[in-house]
Amino acid sequence: MIYFDNGATTFPKPKSVVNAVNYAITKIGANPGRGGHNMAIKASDVLFECRNNAAKLFDIENPENVIITNNCTTALNTVIKGILKPGDHAVISSYEHNAVVRPLEYLKSNGVEYSVADVDYNDTEKTIGNFRKAFKENTKLVVCTHASNVFGIRLPIQRIAALCKLNGILFCTDAAQTAGIIPISLKNSDIDYLCTAGHKGLYGPMGTGLLVINSDTIPESLIQGGTGSLSAQVNQPEILPDKFESGTHNLLGIAGLNEGIKYVMNKSPQKIFDYEISLAKNLYDGLSKIKDIELYTPKPDDEGFVPVVSFNIKNTDSEKTAQILNDKFNIAVRAGLHCAPLAHKCFGTLEKGTVRAVISSFSTRFEVNYLIKSVSQINYYKRM
Image 1 (cartoon, helix red, strand yellow):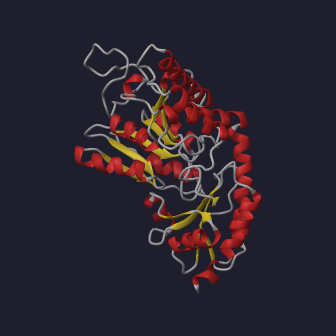
Image 2 (image 1 turned 120 degrees about the horizontal axis):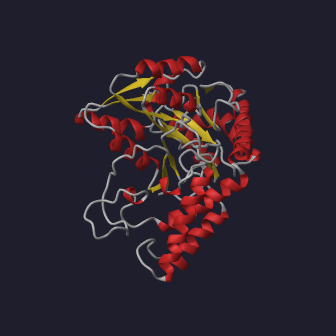
């Protein structure tokens, strides 16, 4: 299958990732931090190396501030629910994923409120102004995606983070679509919390994610339990990363994630981005020449986008288009709302969704051209 569903999870994975997972389950297989025998020590070494490599990738001094999570959603929930208390107010962008919106909706019953700041991708100053206008005296946290998972538009997160800093507001970014693709340095950054998936642009297995804490304000933990440390005390340890890593780690996933991070660092996020965005531009150009195509953004560029292209065929449900691409051409794309109804509302696609194609470092020009050719034949197969 030709795979363009990399916004959901990247495929294929680097061979080094596959080998690391296989080695972990066949040669290590022990619980990190839960024993002094050789296999447990090897498992702890894998965990330690993954944490260190993530710290290097995101340019943060203390590896202990890198928290291993199950996914980006867990990381976002940890920040949102661990920071906001009754009476607090939060601000989010109009492009947010349900991993941000739903926790905030849940917290409404606990006396937390939130506002949505509209994003104008043609006018950064207007976007910044909209965030500023949304602030209240009790605004405690801003959560903002780094790039839309539907339309690939990048938000000016460094400027929004700086605005938050000036106003004494904590800032969290959802980097699920940018980590490993866009260079991100937390050194001298106003980003307080970076949340990301381990299985997308970092090329790790599913069931992995990261929360990188770049603030002295530490969220409360969502769960409590065994950490392999300070076991004589009944209260949850406050030290990092133990505070957030109760229970047995996903060693297989962490082993794969470690190799995925090394893959990204060896290639460099910038080189990965340059390759992927060039293919996204080719895809956009090819699609734009097809009759009855609907494209919702300008052509992706190097400054304002990640390699995501959303489109529709006029008078065709997005799910139907994706089904034909799957059944007739063996192409995997994502259709529907992509768990981001706020973004679809902004672009008028809430009723029908979009077809989304996302490039990875393993995508090829041949595959892009094949997708373009296949989309051009959709209307023919609709009549069959």
